[in-house]
Image 1 (cartoon, rainbow, N blue to C red):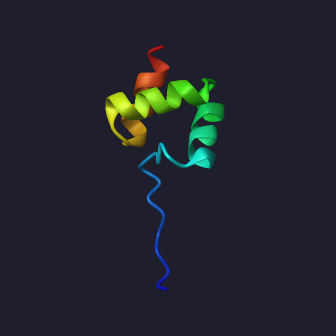
Image 2: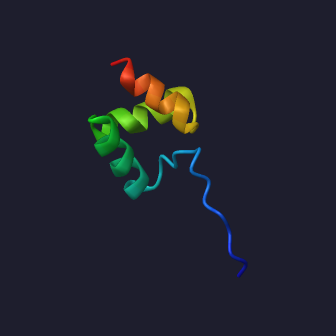
Length: 54
């Protein structure tokens, strides 16, 4: 299996550890992070902007 680079500019809404990390980082709930990913897409910048506006 080749060594692949992680894409840090994306939030994988289906990965609990990424959702939890983003929730801790932004001071929001996991549900809020998942909702932001659903509404804004998986771009980390867009998700963090949506969470900051709450």
